[in-house]
Length: 269
Ligand code: NAD
Image 1: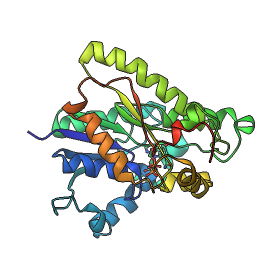
Image 2 (image 1 turned 45 degrees about the vertical axis):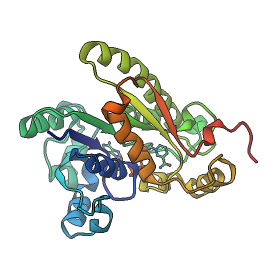
Image 3 (image 1 turned 90 degrees about the horizontal axis):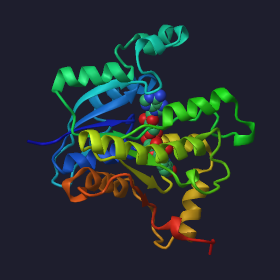
Image 4 (image 1 turned 120 degrees about the vertical axis):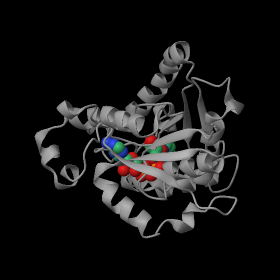
């Protein structure tokens, strides 16, 4: 039977999550997505109205089907954790069961267990502020939303200085990569589950545009990376499909660069 893949962090057809869903669908997986509650309505409406049909086309000409879209806010584990103002918010009140535990339970009830879990979300409310000026609240929010797992998306700002990637997002990515290793050990021993991260190069996604410097980073990468070409989200999607497949059966605890090789450069050229 086809594997079931849940991709958390899909709210349009521009980001890495969408491309990963497509690559997994092309490889025969059944697709479920978790969509951030405030973005749910517009995403579902756009899907229904066929706005994404052009980008749903798979290599064999068929359209990617999303079996179910689950509302999700990855910052809250269960209803007790949700503050009153969020509960009262119109967009949150319009949906239900969007905390992490509830989504996991719903998926289990609806379809049984999941074979592939992808974390493709991040949120740093103060990402445009330097770390030095980041508030405790902003820092903790970044770490809370942006680290998690079994395939996740990370960024080289975790290990090298990337001015402009602020608000604790560099710290969140460092936590994510460290968790990838420790969880690989724990989940590997306990459940034979593999846990990996993809360190992706710059892509002009919705989240990246919020940072402000994404065009500069794309240009920088083009100028300086060993492979002088645009990085396409599909290349990250294909790597995720590989990592989730039996072809990668001995790969766990790894951070794989998909960045046209930029990470390997010591100086700009
Ligand atoms: P994106 O906007 O497509 O994806 C981010 C998603 O996170 C959005 O759909 C957003 O709605 C969702 N989200 C935010 N807060 C959430 C929450 N609390 N609960 C649930 N969902 C939430 O942008 P993207 O750039 O494709 O991001 C995907 C991943 O790739 C992120 O982890 C990001 O840090 C990582 N990444 C991106 C780049 C890049 O240049 N774009 C580079 C390296 C790594």
